[in-house]
Picture 1: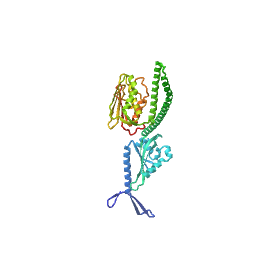
Picture 2 (picture 1 turned 60 degrees about the horizontal axis):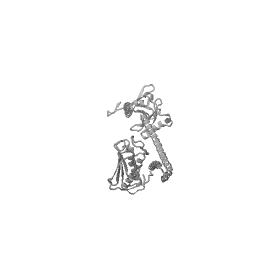
Picture 3 (picture 1 turned 120 degrees about the horizontal axis):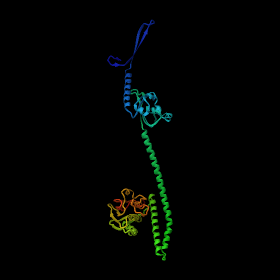
Picture 4 (picture 1 turned 30 degrees about the vertical axis):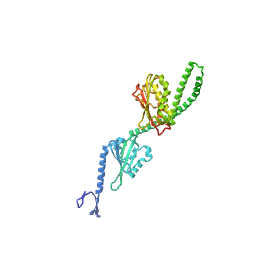
Length: 427
């Protein structure tokens, strides 16, 4: 350590050269001084930086943090690196960073390319498979940054931070697997559903064909004046069951049209009250046979709207049939209408029957849904009527609602229709 004239302390390296004569006596001395102050300061700064890094790195246990020289040989190693990589500091100092790469990445030159990328771009970040001591693979999230001299910019080495994300990777892979399985299952279910729809459409047409000559034969036999009362009663029984079969087939055809968006409407101006009365007349026999008390209050003052009369009759026929099925003998059914705010009509069909459980209400309009756990035995049908009714009402721009206080508390179905639906040609 030397002082200048201004008393500034400088780090100087001195060397003295002694010149001697032939007899070995000193003639003169040459002293060479080199000012190494800046070099000394830089070395101190480097050592302080390394000390700070060492303190920081040793305090971090969840991350592998280590330093490398410009060639990628390890020079510093923290406790987190020992935990993540499995090597002690003594085992890795001086080793090349390629020690942690699997064979396929070594063959591809990945370790060197990462260092080159970090030196050129200021960082290199990737998630990939790495190897710890013993050959075990783990999924590492790695960041490499170059270390450079502040003044000259010369590359001093690299710092690398790595964390083990194997558990997260496994969870992500499992999510991907489950998603793929779900998508495959959905695709399979959709294809099975389309196959079912095609089957129902074909089956409906095939079943309807042989019923036509049966109905014609029944009509011809009924014209025979010599038939006994017993024979006529048998023919009437056959006729009723043929009509039941026809209704079931019609429902299958309609639900197929609904699924494929082919439920066509023929809208015309109509009186909705007339549609309700015609549906009541069709169901009159069943309602009377069970001794049901039917109350009709059609109080809407503007029942005129645009719609398909036959399809709307089908809606109210389905609702009345449903009420008759699930209402015990001696029960009551009420049909009433009212004006809707903003135009249109609402028609309610309420009964005192089996009711609807709260868990069933959200799916009451699903196809093939068959009532409640207390559905009376002998109730016929495929559970398609309400699904078809909903499709028809929605095709008219309206909606159908179901409410019930619970099983055994009866149910109310409300059909709300606009006066002039914007779209009334198809479901």
